[in-house]
Image (tube, rainbow, N blue to C red; front, side, top):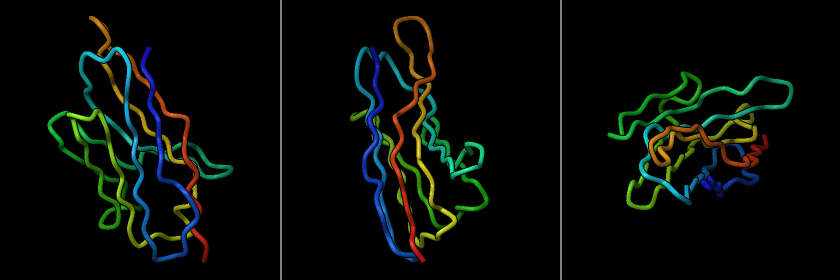
Length: 119
């Protein structure tokens, strides 16, 4: 059994910062890509930032220059540092990871953490 547990969401004023964390635990052999997604009310879930096992990163245009994704492989944890937050960043943020369990790879999701940015 593998679990992804997110933390760090909350309410912040526009221009503020938050740091999200997502820790994977369980019968993990290895973790490949780890990703942050978000879903705003009435919108589809969108990919915010992926990070590969070698820490290669990419960002959605809407967050470039403001968000930074990183990972600590020793802790099986991925982070999302969010700066200069805008009301448009309000969403439920989900982490996702491609995890090898035994001989197979599976995609796991966290439960989501709410981020609310007030104007």
